[in-house]
Image 1 (cartoon, rainbow, N blue to C red):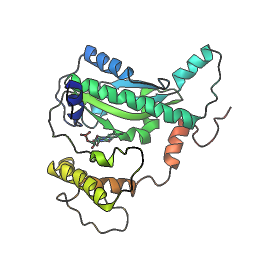
Image 2 (cartoon, rainbow, N blue to C red):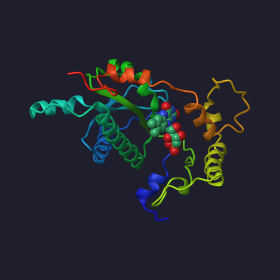
Image 3 (cartoon, protein in one colour):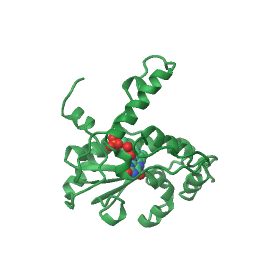
Image 4 (cartoon, rainbow, N blue to C red):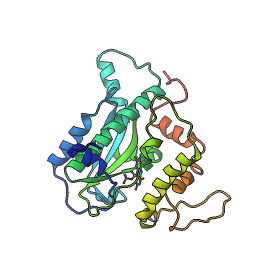
Length: 257
Ligand SMILES: Cc1cc2nc3c(=O)[nH]c(=O)nc-3n(C[C@H](O)[C@H](O)[C@H](O)COP(=O)(O)O)c2cc1C
């Protein structure tokens, strides 16, 4: 494989969940956000909120960014141009998610290049109203994901990824045979087990369905973890749709006039 500083920085990515007390300077913060902004965009349909209140995030990181899909400020521009928004909110949301995610990952890489570690927090989706209150968000701004950042007080090994053969398919989607699936599962599970990842995080997901628990932290790993998530949680989109509706995004119907 080719290697250079950018590739090395990206391949060295690992989520950081322990932080020193050192507070990143304003210059560092600005650099990270500015580098984030330079990500490609469909319409810069996002905003980033910053909180320096350590108590506000579970890992007590000095910085907490909340990455939002933001239609509010774009609509202000439309008013100035004397245009009315007609595109449906599902389309806007899907493009907005891409804009926001690309920006957020650019921030992660920029942070890493300056010696900072980070970790995303996915719970924002389901705490949208709470976050909206905390940050005084106008309607049509939806908190998508949070990102904690700071100087690392741990240096875990990088976590595994699927084999590239399970990710990159040229010209045609292949018939995935059992052997390929086993190899992909093995690479992920052995990689996380080698780090005692779930034991260290004390993060085994409880069985809520009628199944006997046969896993201990000696064999509980990524594929079981992710199956327990998507095999048990959020069967009904209602809660999320409600969060979106409360924030003024109407995903399953036309936006009311
Ligand atoms: C959208 C998203 C949500 C995440 N939510 C959480 C979270 O709530 N808590 C957490 O500790 N890690 C969270 N993570 C981090 C993942 O667990 C982590 O990226 C994954 O295990 C791969 O490990 P690595 O980032 O160290 O390579 C999240 C990552 C993403 C992209």
